[in-house]
Length: 107
Image (cartoon, rainbow, N blue to C red):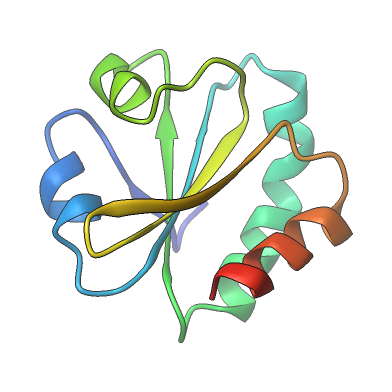
């Protein structure tokens, strides 16, 4: 996950909420099988759409305030934030095609 911005409780405001560019934030955990499965295609789309948005990730276990801010119940949860506001989310993404369509719709 080298090109992804890492979001924590400490940098949530500056990294996501105050960012001038749209942010696609993946909230998950290392122990979550669905998160691990989604990671490779999230990375692929992060590279593909790097000119249109900032792609970021957050460990929900290490950043409870981020989890609370976005009212995350299930992981992975991916949100698009523009101008400090959540525009859309996808929860427990299953396929690369599903994630791609969601990203394209929101960017």
